Length: 482
Image (spheres, rainbow, N blue to C red):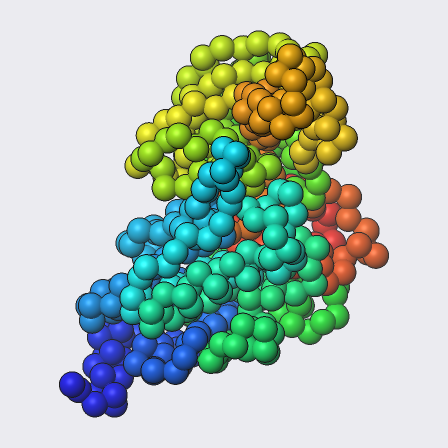
């Protein structure tokens, strides 16, 4: 067996060879750290890579994945959302999955009801690489989360990874982005917390040097300026530089429809998004796009792009070719066929065929959709309304007699299990986080001096860094520009 130093040197040389350019000093330090990490025999070994936009995180991770393959080590690529997994897959040229599709499985209780739990990790000597780790929350999971057991997604990910024999973990993220909803920081990028609560042998590498070529991009140049304000912890109005930058545009409401139409033609519907501050504004943008640009009149039509807003385990339970039963909050699907529209309990429903936009290798599958939330400004159906619907459906099964039989019938009813979805051409920044689009339109809403706090800067930075090719700043006042 080669000595560790020889292994490290060989890994460093091979990884550097996978870079498309000469690594920066920061990337050089990262290469050394990854080589030592890959050769480490420490228990529960983990490495955090924290890097800002433009510092070469994706280039570094892609080179690391390629080098692992060269040395016969299996990389397992994960991300919190389907779109983030799709982005990871594209830059690494390696299959990536959402966290929940890999680690959760559904089992049957003795009474036939579903019971959700962790799948066994049967992998050996695998290295898990989790991108967009800043999105992974540590709140105990609610009824809208995969497991209702007082645990968080972070808890379950750590247990899954480290029950595999000699498995290791790399967490990649940008801590200038928005933290998970309801949290003040990104727990998965907090080294002290991860060491204390999960017993990890963990180190952190920060990439802070922006790759020179990246600053030629107006998008990253301005994102870098916002990030510097975040670093200073003194929130103030950013000043955007757009002169001579053909990838940053300033538009107002009168330009919006023509701009979206051009973006759809140039980049496609799936590569264009409006990021806004509220569900109400996202709803208004989505309806305008459907009616004025796509000329769709029905409440739901073939081609509509939908984001799931509440977890659902029902519709994939009997589909063998998809490895999970979870249709997760944040997953994006596209309607491929309208099977039937119907009204029941005063609510409009539709049976439709859909497919995952981030996983085209999965075949289309059928679901029932609750259409009421599509036309609502609310982010999802309120709990009391769902309770009322459940009670109304239960009356149809009253002849079954026992409460347990009635409850089982209700839980299997297509109207009770109908998917909750919103249109996905416009969304809040938390919903967009983890994804990237060729064309992004940023709508800040009504901005006052008092509202431009640190959280707002994180919101703006996150929105900027969703764009790959073109960004449009909608209705920003003159004060924002140099």
